[in-house]
Length: 155
Image (cartoon, rainbow, N blue to C red; front, side, top):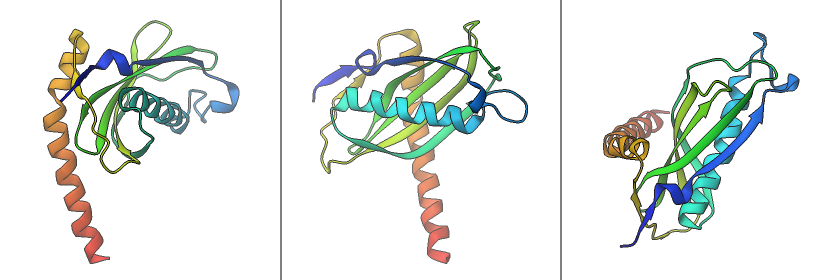
């Protein structure tokens, strides 16, 4: 099986908090940040696997620091793990002071039945730390999907 570095899927975009993106606290609305991240992680997955993908789940999204009106922020994302048909993508948001404002893990599903993803190869220290936790996060996500299926059967 071929391997591909996390770096090959790295996508970085800069944004600025606009007036129309504000919530009632005059900070970036969390849903707007989720929208930016969701679009970007799909781009990371496409760069890594060269297949169309859809968001399967937002596995974790942590809002750490608020982003103020006019503030510039950067979203970076890279593939951090994968299974036969899905890829996990890690995204982090840095504010203008280079502080962690948010981070997220999303699972994306291939639109192709047998995508034959390359294996993820972490290189940087951050990539190694993030990828090292993939197996544990995948097991937790699998248990969650099974719990959802059990509840769905009761509906």
